Image (cartoon, rainbow, N blue to C red; front, side):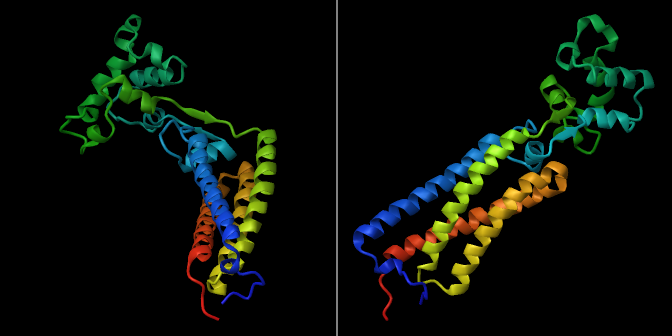
Length: 254
């Protein structure tokens, strides 16, 4: 039995209808926030979906070397002539990756020909050598090559934008969480559950907001953003569900 002065199930019908509508509105807002997060952050690493690299790019910034550059620099493939390796590296660093891929004017030095002559024995889709690497990392066409040819540099969001976002989220989400927390305390559920979810929501929100700023100095704090954000969303969603149930479950006997 709740020890909170207010019991939601004891409220009049009109009040319970109003609170139910507001709980659903909170839930819609939570779902919209998740949608916005995916839409806002995805593709920073030029791949669909939100990844740690996307978040690292947003809050810390990332500089990644193109996989083809990394492979060539570490001496792969070993059979590639030094001159051809330098030509490929020069092309990948030139800023003309698209224009010069199969540039007729380059003749035998065109990257398309060099890759075909030196890489497709393993990196063709139907290659019988390379332990199946051709099926996983094909290099037959430019659409394949371009996925691996571009180095990436993603700058973090400007400080002024982060300040504005922190201002908006800290005030609105903290106020919303206090309302949801006190509504949760006015339910019948075990005290450990009610108080635990309230605490998790508060700590999750604090960790998420703090992680935004800590990650600017070190990318090692990006997982804190992920863990804290997930904790906050889980605690808030479960709290809303428990509040909604409380409003319409039969009254508990005294």
